[in-house]
Length: 104
Image (cartoon, rainbow, N blue to C red):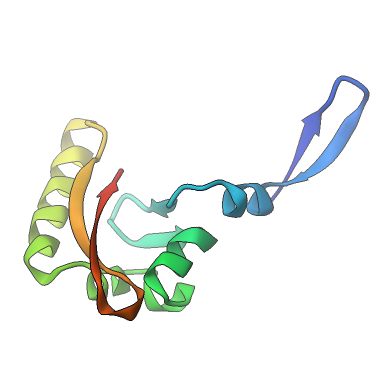
């Protein structure tokens, strides 16, 4: 994940992965079928897991069981309408505490 940034005095290599992992935000991406294919470092640290534990449909293991069906239904509805996906859910955080998160 490399990009070029211009500082006005030429191009400087920019490591996009470092940038995404450095900002104080929980970032993940998904394919149109709902398969989550990326979580940034702060997300993984917050959850206390490695990427392989949450990619694909494995993310359902860290989401409260009562929330999974609603998330999937909302995702499918947003795909059909083109509406931006946003859903607040409960996730299992490192050390078994539960916290709310907004996905989108």
